[in-house]
Image: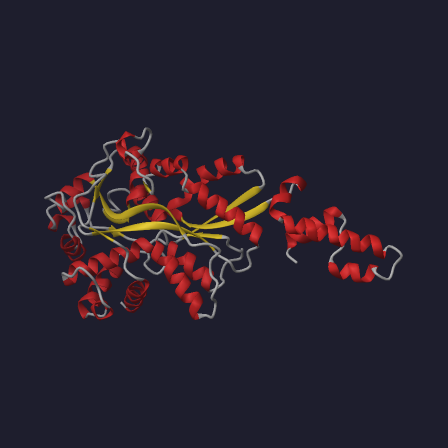
Length: 393
């Protein structure tokens, strides 16, 4: 018997089955059995429908990538106003951390919904749990919530030096890491050292995607095999990146906030999600008196954020409340809120015409329909191999 059922029965003064056995020896045997029958009938109607009557709430714990923090906090208020008997508890982690912490049971809370930045991480989770012997992983098929893609950003003046043709180039970035100083790259001596930032690929999906695209460029290939990832050229490249990036952040939003706070003398170029780059551009403009330019690698990788309701230790009533929230996220009004925070919605919207969104702020480099090749995310096997090579580098 779950905790909600116990509480419900206690409110009705209906004994549990063990209490009923004891009471059968008493003169009130008939009344007790009748009460049990009433309880069974009410339970058959569904505890979920009766909770509002007795003022009980379902708590839905959502673990999301940090890039969704602000958009989910806005939507949370709206959802709870419309659904007063559901309480949302938001937790934020790096997307790879979401998967690792769940499969290794490292959380000190019980997640209901997982919202990592990339649908491939949901596939990875399912594969890992099935390998551990679990067969029933999710309550429903995971649902697509919003999209974004990997981009690079650079402070305007420095981007013009590093990418003189206004196009992102992995080889130019590698040369900058090798050269280390701006004056040798054609920049000003007072700019000092060249500083690149990406997230920790063992904890964050954007760092994994960065290494994947960089490795493809290094080998001049459209797709990577396990043998490709183990090519000595890739180990050398990863070692260069690892030695150049000081304390890579655990999540993309933390990275971008650090990039903006540190400014152009301590952070020059970074790889992030398009959504968070658009959302925080105005903050950069205000804090550093200049904005950064957005660059689209060609090809780049588009990611789809998926919402998955996990089944382990989650009651049906809690799962039902979770489904209500996921369905809420995909409604038109909430999809417009996602667009306000720089995401690409799952529904067909004219992004340029949406008021109060970064899509109509003339942000340097932003393209609603970039003229580049957009790939889907690499499979979990390749991503895991990339993490292994990074560990060894």
